[in-house]
Length: 218
Picture (cartoon, one colour):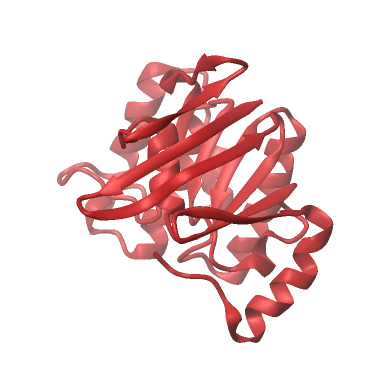
């Protein structure tokens, strides 16, 4: 169980999260929507220092080496091709084979990664994140920039990851995309947890969101 207890995160004078508490079982896919969702992922990963509160697993601090983070808009060092980026990951683990992921998320391997379009950068970010083989995956807007075909591929992949024991925490503003994928969904707003929904409630929630109510983009 990953426990987020009374987390407070501030961006200058702006309070992003204030007293957020979540209990996230292992080997499941958890969704987060609403304001502050990206900041929450960065805090879990250790890139953002909370002002107060704790993030733990089974009573112990989460270890960064157990996690991988996919940014909403992946960025890459200038001068490195997509092939170079994949090679850097393989340098740490030669047993990793990216071919299956490349078939699912095609990338022009000999193009400079930093100059790729938004869709190809997202494909490469997904590939690099999943190649690392971590048991805790933090995915910030994993469906953004994907075509409908690739969205379906990602949905099936998320189901597979959850079933094989990974703990996935993802953010999304498009609730219909996570229906049938996420085991639960936390809705954030005003720095707080506004609601938690079980998987069987997401269909009704998604229809409400698509009808115009929606969720904040920040």
